Image 1 (tube, rainbow, N blue to C red):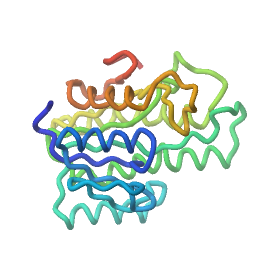
Image 2: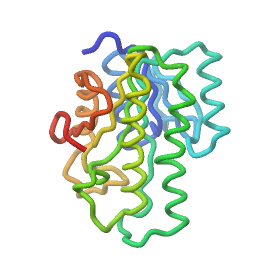
Image 3: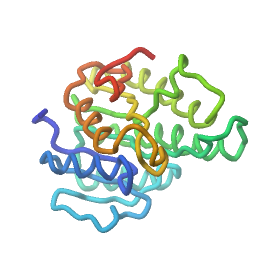
Image 4: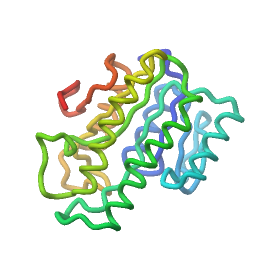
Length: 224
């Protein structure tokens, strides 16, 4: 394990991948700051778990979380942008409502949350974005227009951010967590939450490149 990883912040930690990833990090002896809309992670508690209430689709909430981190003097080694929505996965025709709602969380909120927390991220740290292989141009398909486009935008931001933060030696990684058996992915998805979480952990501890796309199903990097 990378012994330099001591504190990690995970958004959307109340269920699915975020919840199991939080437990995995804690089991590895890493302190976790979880950000959830409710301010809770179900009934789960742990001595090394701190939970902040926050909704990344609202600027005021983002600023509140950033202020709480600074006031508490918390410095992060890894920021994991896990929170996201898939509101139009079965649709082909984009609508204003679903585009706006999807981008508010998956793109605008995620970008603004990341920017707000950069001062709380240690030099030499990491920023991770849960993206999707569905957003790669070669995997384009008619379905899920808002979801695919919002994640494609995050892939671009990750490359740009990696270049911007190179002087601070902060690694930026957009990754495909797999088609996972979660509320979003459905029970018939081929990848278990455990496999996805282990793949994400591998990316955090083994990847050395910045701005490159990591696919947990390949266990490594792939081209955009």
